Length: 121
Image 1 (cartoon, helix red, strand yellow):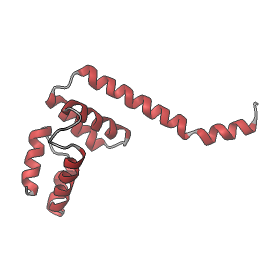
Image 2 (image 1 turned 180 degrees about the horizontal axis):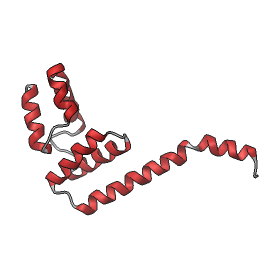
Image 3 (image 1 turned 90 degrees about the vertical axis):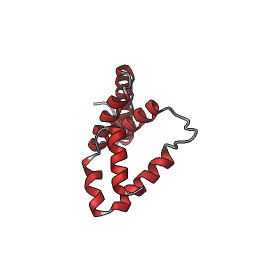
Image 4 (image 1 turned 45 degrees about the vertical axis):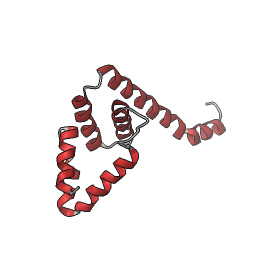
């Protein structure tokens, strides 16, 4: 599949292609082919363990946690196109929020250690 065919497939699947991917094609058309190969590795078409809604919600969660605005926007289009239930999307957002809050607490462990050695003031 050539780069332009991949772009068209992405438009059909997501409604819109992220600008960075669109701009990458004239610069390096092989990059999008490698990207699609990686997608096929991560989300196999044959005998997938997860359904399409779960895959989209996981991708959305990773994009939010990884602070990737382009991916968040792409997944927002995809979840609307798939008609994923509002409640599932909101619960996904709540889970991501919890995970990020937990990350902050976990990352602060050295701060807690320092405060513990400083004693109460």
